[in-house]
Amino acid sequence: MPVVRDLRVLLRLRDFRRLLAVRLLSQAADGVYQVALATYVVFSPEKQASPTAIASAMAVLLLPYSLLGPFAGVLLDRWRRRQVLLHGNLLRTALAGVTALLIVARVPDWLFYASALSVTAVNRFVLAGLSASLPRVVDSRERLVMANALSPTAGTLAATVGGGLAFAVRLGAPEGADALVVLLGAALYLSAALCSLLMPIGLLGPDAPAARRLGALLTGTARGLAAGLRHLAERRTAACALAAMTLMRFCYGALTVTVLMLCRHAWTSSESKGMALLGLAVAVSGAGFFAAAVITPWAVSRLGRLGWMVACATVAAVLEPALGLPFERVPMLIAAFVLGLTTQGAKIATDTVVQSSVDDAFRGRVFSLYDVLFNVAFVGAAGVAALMLPPDGRSALLVSAVAALYAVVAVTLAGFRNRQEA
Image 1 (cartoon, rainbow, N blue to C red):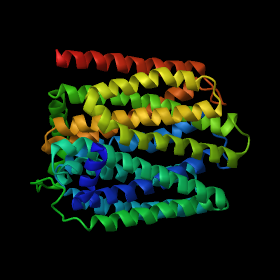
Image 2 (cartoon, rainbow, N blue to C red):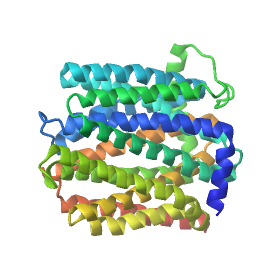
Image 3 (cartoon, rainbow, N blue to C red):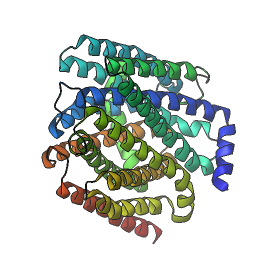
Image 4 (spheres, rainbow, N blue to C red):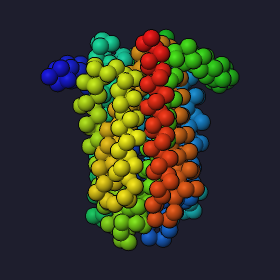
């Protein structure tokens, strides 16, 4: 099979394997850390989670560090990206250790959130650096689609595995397990930092990072961001793909909060069983991500990148209400798989469009903006869900609205694709 052949070729590339290893360890740690925070905020016995509380937690954790995205992009186009991966993961190791101490000490929520925010702020630099570095370790443009199918998707699967491991630790040792899970994440961050040392400093670029004083660098950030936006605006296909992916991310975020509330309040009254159901939903969605990695290169070769995104949005628009409106466990879990497949399939195509359309000198800035859009869309979705969801998570209006939004994405993308081909 061509997919298997290309995969074997990619894995024979030494530098690609090393960058992939850093991604896997780093995102596995992200999965562990995120589940630790979610279970501490949502499933702790002393906390009565509501959609509003979940949306507030997401806003605290995501929105402030999303503002770092443009700064991260400008710095990534000036700093050695290998050093960003090394020092970023070392810093997260230390900060995650501090978070574990705060959990044990049972400090006020605002102090806990401040610590968690510090870890996720550094995450902006690491994830954007991984995406911007990928074309530097792949030997041809033809294999970039496969690299995007394997690398980010493998990272997502690693995060899913890390989350599953965190669930297992949390369920197996509930007394004081939140801090233990956070320390597990810290150990994985340290492993990612050590793995990055296997790559030469200059391998991941940029080729000629500017040596400027910090003050001059900060004052130039706004100009750099404006230049990145102008560069993106000149590449209409990349801009359209980013807009479509942002809307699909919004849909995924709204449904994520829905499933979380169903697991917490509707499907069981037991906190441990609720966590187990949430873990199962995460695993099923992860299986959808894996399926997307396998299917997307084949689908793109036949439908094109935008055509595959249209197909993903169309499938989601049709199957999401059919499976979600009963609000039953089995159909909702099937929906989690379908949405994992369609969301990740569209993301792989979007990553490839952006990487192929954007010049290397601007790639860090554009991927940082991409990351900001992702997080703002997710937080916005959580806010909308907080307004629309009842305490048990059953809202036919929300599910129907999400299906309509998927349909709008499919129709708009199809129209843009037809105009490009005309």
